[in-house]
Image (cartoon, rainbow, N blue to C red; front, side, top):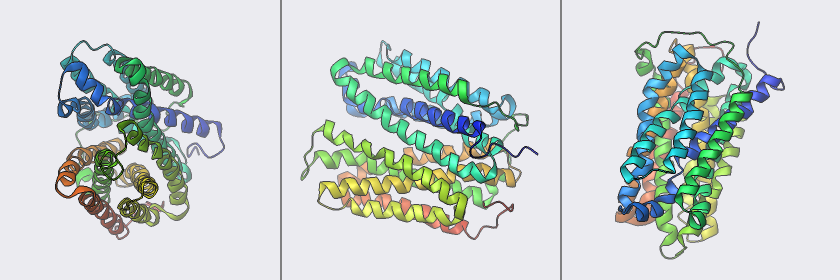
Length: 398
């Protein structure tokens, strides 16, 4: 009986490479404007606050579309939606580079966010269906690692190209990267062998009532809220006394993102060996430890703390995102529905909790930001401990 692709098989390697490339393309596009906010503000004569809408519109479109694309994939298939998402979002990225006005750019970014939703809504469901159970957490960690690299690449690529060539060339470069990754995924990603077509039914009640799924949604929201709060405020801290770094040098802190890529892959291997319930609370503790390190007055220690915090976050997110479809399947919940709700909570946490970082910085400086982020990370840790007491629904470690 075919139980899915196993380690060492050609299909397994193709899935790993394809979803890694897809993760890079999706999150490079999503965060492509974050490093360009000053140039966009000057080019379109908008305020710094208004310029941030170029990122917010994409995340709003992504979050809203997640509630549709997951159920839609139950009808049209996982791989088809992944290919459409990668291709259309890359093409829209190229069109963004020639936007004639500010409002046109915002509209295009909204559409790009909608297009980007196809991959994250179904990636983990695809892994649950097509890979052997013993490898699912490991490859989910690799996929999350690709998203970490993509988030870093989108910021660094645009930041490096915008100064000598302008923001339009920078956005075009991310679009070309996306097309390349879309082509790679199109060539490598195996067709679904275990997908069962279902009608695009409304969300099932159990997707909102299962205690493990609810805890995982909360973990995603709280962990992402802590992560975004730190990165939103870190630039203010590094450009202020006592460090007083230039904006370009301060932006180089995104170079710690590969630590997240590594930690998510390692966490996946550990979860396959020891179980998700055992590994996730450790990731939350690592996140808090990194946050506390950033309180130091030494720049190397601050950067090290940021790296530790990033490692802990991607450990938590990598395990949680891979756990959701497994738990959903065991509880007779369409996996794509549960994955969509998890990611909706994840991006809601980014928008709501992460936005509080500015107020915390203004009122209490960096200690207030660390306290805020620690509360969110601690809440994620509390939920992960609670998950240890929720009965598993199958013999598989869920």
